Image 1 (cartoon, rainbow, N blue to C red):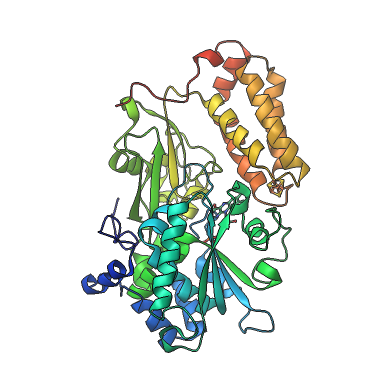
Image 2 (image 1 turned 120 degrees about the vertical axis):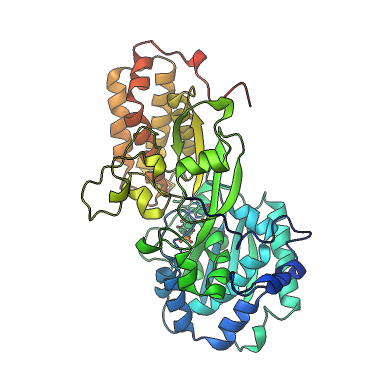
Amino acid sequence: MIKRTDYLTRTYGKPEGWSLRAYEANEANEANEGGLGGYQVARRVLTGMTREQVVDEAKKANIRGRGGAGFPMGVKWSFMPKTVGAKPHYLVVNADEGEPGTHKDRTLMELNPHACVEGCIIACYGIGAHIAYIYVRDELHLSKARLEAAILEARAKGYLGDTPFGKDWPIEVHVHSGAGAYICGEETSMLNSIEGRRGEPRMKPPFPANAGVFGCPTTVNNLETIAAVPTAFGMGAEAFSKLSILHGIGDGGVRLYGVNGHVKKGVVVELAVGPTLNELIYDIGGGVQGDRGVLCVIPGGSSTPVLRPEETVNAPDERLPLHPWHGKSVFDVPLGVDTMRGVGTMLGTCCVTVIAQGTDPVWCMQNLMQFYRHESCGQCTPCREGSAWLERTTSKVLDGKASIGELHDLHDIANGIMGNTICAFGEGTAMPALAFIQKFRAEFEQYVRGERKRADATLTVEPWS
Ligand SMILES: Cc1cc2nc3c(=O)[nH]c(=O)nc-3n(C[C@H](O)[C@H](O)[C@H](O)COP(=O)(O)O)c2cc1C
Ligand code: SF4
């Protein structure tokens, strides 16, 4: 069931909602539902809680990382060394947002930048850091300008600086521009980029909590993950978590859901965790353009395997978390990190791309593979060569020049990438490829038999309605 909320988006649409004045005005209308506004949460945390208490509270919020992998935020914070030794600790906030179909962090930076800064203050204190870098791709000029203005306002008020809120715990937040490469959103690539090196992923281990930016302990979190922190701490982490219908399986709170592609209304909205795909497509997105049916959706950024509405949940055992939806369409399952894993895909960035009936799935795959081929950093042979090979072979299918054997090759190439690369870009390429080949086998074969032609294929829906 859809539950609209406005904890993260309260300032959206307000006159100069991005200013400190607007952010502090939140204080007045709290009635404790959204906790305290206007940096009062950061003040309370820094002056009233120990670092250990902050990390414990963060765990209770059940905020699953909003950047794609869904790792629990509080657990990640707990990986940082308990005491700050010779090496300083850092917070790196990932606002690269390069995932196709994803445009949620940008709205926060532009329309509620102070929540991002306040989240940085609380997170820095919790993980033992004095400096946060917010990594924003350069072309997001307005996002950077709004963040920088918010940082100046917060510094002028003494919320940042040597003694924020009178606490002897210096905190500074810096905006760091990235040149705009998809791979720089991968956390270790981003760390290299911040250091002024080439944006290529690093081997793990060591993990960032041990050796991150400048070789120092670092927590990397997505921008929305951090922006949710003031709300969670303001209302109490458990109360925040319980807003979600998936609180019981450790997926708490509210988050930004996006819907784009062939819907009538592409939007980013704030909802309690747990709407279904059908609700997003029809109640939020206004239905499919041209009132067509849905061919498939990409649930959370292009790296997540497609789902078709005909797919049903197979969870006959009552002990399985997905049992309540056994036999139902996967489009009726609440969208959460583990529920989407349970149906064989990923929630990812939670921004759904809807693909209408009539669209050509083979062309969809070729379009995606073009992107991955272009964005591979080239360090690993299976990814560099495999992404190009996938793209070439799918193009050949579209041109009617591929054999059935080459359809088998597509499986082999994708499977050859999986698990054989330095970073998850490899899986992000192979998994959607495998899903398209497996779920649209009939259409791939039609091309091989000459029953489909590239000239008739389309990626758009017309007439627009
Ligand atoms: C190729 C690739 C691109 C990524 N791009 C982004 C991105 O643009 N933004 C983001 O927050 N995370 C991105 N990630 C995930 C990050 O590596 C990292 O897991 C995330 O920033 C951690 O934050 P979270 O735990 O708060 O989600 C990407 C991962 C990969 C493999
Ligand atoms: S998997 Fe691809 S993007 Fe990641 S390090 Fe290897 S070549 Fe680069």
